[in-house]
Image (tube, rainbow, N blue to C red; front, side, top):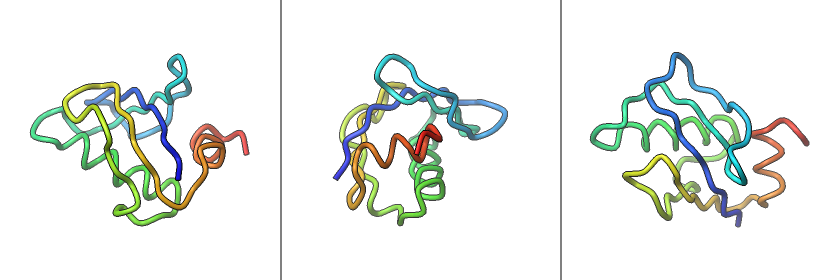
Length: 88
């Protein structure tokens, strides 16, 4: 189980991992930050990038914040960071 900090930038032109923001991973999403649309888009984006089902991704903290903490079941923190940042 991995617990990862993310910094989200909504209303971007494309969905992509930008890099790091302190100890968080910075991700740009096309979805607006209204009515939970960015959170839904984030789960979909992470599931696609990590090749896991969306139900394995749980938003622990930050539902209404750009700074989020997510839990990903079945993967290690090192594996998730490597897959998203391209360091593995």
